[in-house]
Structures are given as structure tokens and as C-alpha cells.
Length: 363
Picture (cartoon, rainbow, N blue to C red):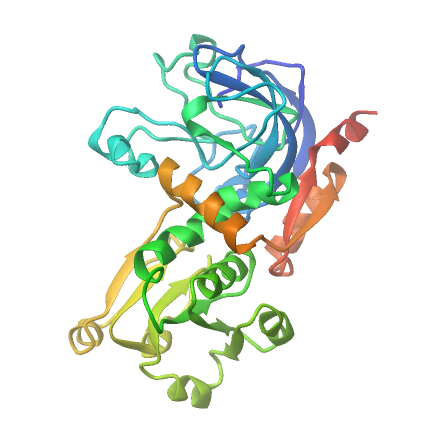
């Protein structure tokens, strides 16, 4: 939700300038309005998108920036009939949309032209909080957040709260394309490019949907991790192995967020197969038209998911016992996680900040 310009009182972590490191700061949240839910943030996952955003790599560069869109906590106060004080809830990548266009009516709020991201998005006038107008949203690396009820998710009792936040980003980001392309289909073979947080989640969900999964990675260093969840892992740098995978996969989900060569990976798709980008890479990719013509490949992208599909994803994960692989850290360690991400050393474990520790940075 938006914050009050110059506001104080809520402890948070923020990046003050492009490429800066996380610093303890204070922000101001608005008073809850009609249909708002006031949430005490207990956990917030650290997504690779947070690093890209704070580095200004995606044009998301409104500072000071408090990132975090994998939020889990409890209701402090509620002006919504849908949520009760003390209830476990979560917030993902968006906090508002127009709520009236065809896309919103279809449950595709994530594609609404007026969708407002959880952090570093300008907050327009006439959106319910005039004290926040013309400032920007700030996310879940903070003690509290105020969000319209439509974009708050009830966390099922069977889902431990510390696992919930990452599902509202990595979970829905990977579930949505698999839901369209894999779920409910027999004998599916799925390739997953990259084995970081998104890759790990993609593999777990695809396996839960009954697919055979192969991870396509830079090297074999994570082969045992892949085997532990029931997947195979290969290196795309092994030309013999990649040749042997020619026309193997019904679907490939590419989770890598840096530019890479996809031509050789594409050849492992079956004729008529689906290749879906999840990684936010601003540079264009070169693909020969002949590659598409002779193979009837379908190339697409996918951006998180709408509210109804996110609720469906939470239920699916609970039913099939699909949870992210996480590590709970203190707020003081969050900056170090960003450094590890920058160096490509974060791996497939999602670091989740225990926000109850943020006060230690202010002592």
C-alpha cells in the first residue's frame, strides 16, 4: 500500500538510492479506510525481483524504496467483512487495480492497466487515500501494511505462515503457466530452465501435477537437490546431452532473470510445444522465424496471476503439500542476501525475513 510522504512510526528496511544497500528507516502508513485491512507483517520473503527493482534495472526506481511482495502476517484491524482480527493473511505483488475493467472482472487484475504494485508504484489520486496520493507504494520489509481487502489472501490453517509469503510471488508466478499448459494433461514432460527460487517452485508444482521434470541448468552442482524433489538435472553446456533431449518436452518454463541463449534449449521442445518466459529480462531475444515455422512452437510469458487463481494456487499447494524451500533470517541479514543474489550465490532457497527482528536494528 502507499505510504505517507515524510511519514514516520513504522520500522522498515529501505534502499535510499539506485543500487544502494538496505538500511533501517521509518515510513508512515495511512489509516485504514473502507474495505482496508491493517496487517502486522511477521514474515516477508526476499525475491530476486526485489534486487532488480532496488538496482533500478526494470525502470522501477522510486526512492526511498521499501521492497517486499511476499508478505505474511496477522490482521491488526479490519474494515472488511472478509477478514477478522488475528487471522493469518498474506499480500503478494499487487495492492490495487481499477476493479471495474473487463480484465478485473475476469480475475486478471495483474494485467489491469491501473494495477498498482506493492512497492515502488505511483499511488494516484482518488484511490481511497488522499494522504498518499502522488507518493509511492512501499512493501513488506516493514512492520505493518494497509491493503484493500480484494488483494489480501486468507492463509489456510494447514499452511505455516513462514511459507505463505513466497507462494504469493514465486508460487503464483509458476503455478499460473503450469495451470494453463500442464495441469490436467496426461504424460507431460516439462523442462525447467534455471534452478533458483522460481525454478525450484516450478519443478515442485509440475511434479505435483503429474509431470516428468528435467531441470536445465548451467552445471550439475545442484543435481542432488533436483533428485531430492524427484527431478532430473542436466547442464545446457553439455551439447551431447542437449542433442539427446531434442523434441523431448511438451512445455519449457524459463525462470532465468538474466539474458541467455535459448536457441539450443528451444530444440528440446516437441513440435507444437510451449515455451514460457518467467524471468524479467529487458534485453530482446533472437529467435529465427524458421525455428518457429518448422516446429510450431508457442512462445509466451506469464506475470504472476490474478486474485482467483492465487486463491486456487494456495489450495493446491496445501492439498499436495507443495511448499517453497525457505530459510528464515533476521532483518539484519537481509542486505547480505541481496549481495549473495547479486553474485548468483543465493541458490534455490528462499530467504524469508522474520520481521519481528527489525527492532534490533533500531536499538
